[in-house]
Length: 241
Picture 1: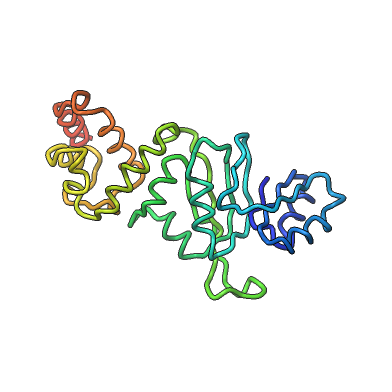
Picture 2: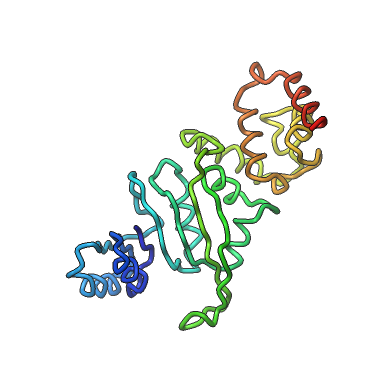
């Protein structure tokens, strides 16, 4: 179990008391000293002075339970979820409400949310009012749940290629016929819209994570491996369903 931004060790202590073996990550040297003093007799707790935005995550299976700092949660999660080949199985995180709502939403899709959801399920388990904290922050919080998908939508080995593919499209923020014109013909995009169920004039934010994964898989086949009659057949099957 990994506690990111362990602070004064409230979550670390609760996890250890529940019988978990805990890695407590903290970047502040003063807090690290306090944590080490507090848990020096707890063999199940290891305190590391590291920056979670650059730390190398374990290859073996692990879980994260953390009250992430609101100002750094985006960078920490971007690093944690960037390479799906690391051992992350699940995470239960307290983050800013708007951050959780934005990246767990089906629409409008975000670049990060689309990418993360190729390998993980993101759900909001609850909303936490700001007055539930001491001292209270300026905004409400959310309990964000992250679970590894039993079957990934994209091969983990293709994660860098997939990131570049969707990042290029989201950067343009134009209808897909233009956003994907270097990879797919307008005719193919129109055929895909009929097969996958998105509007012909859809923009990158209008596709959900499943649709993006299937568009990527189709584009990866190359022109010789994606005959248009196959799209016609799938579109006809969808219309009959």
